[in-house]
Length: 138
Image 1 (spheres, rainbow, N blue to C red):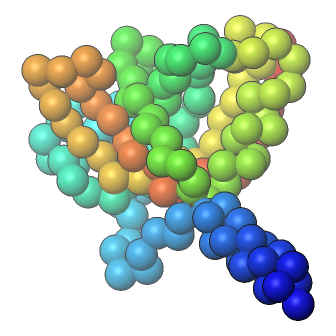
Image 2: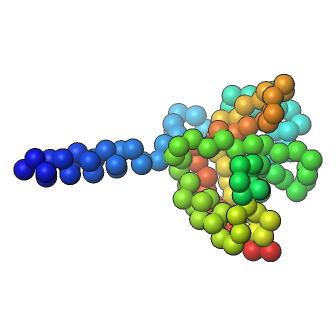
């Protein structure tokens, strides 16, 4: 009986601790682009954004959301422990070699935007959800 209770408690803990973080439905994300945010970052500070972008990574520690219409700008995605759609992005990144040198990953990224002009990276998106992830191998 004690072993059964311990197993149930352990299973309950695992289910709760691995559940994705869901964003609050009280705030509707602003649909925008990397280019729009990069041109007026203070306008989007602290706001929940929905951005369709290309995800680029060196496969080690650096990642950035980019847009082909403004190639000199990007937004650094910050990943919490868990977020909705994490497995789809992880699966896309695991294809081929680490990083995105051999693939193009595009998706919709939802999260809170932060603008810190005196820091690097100065534009960040704290991810709450990733969806519509697609991968094209080069």
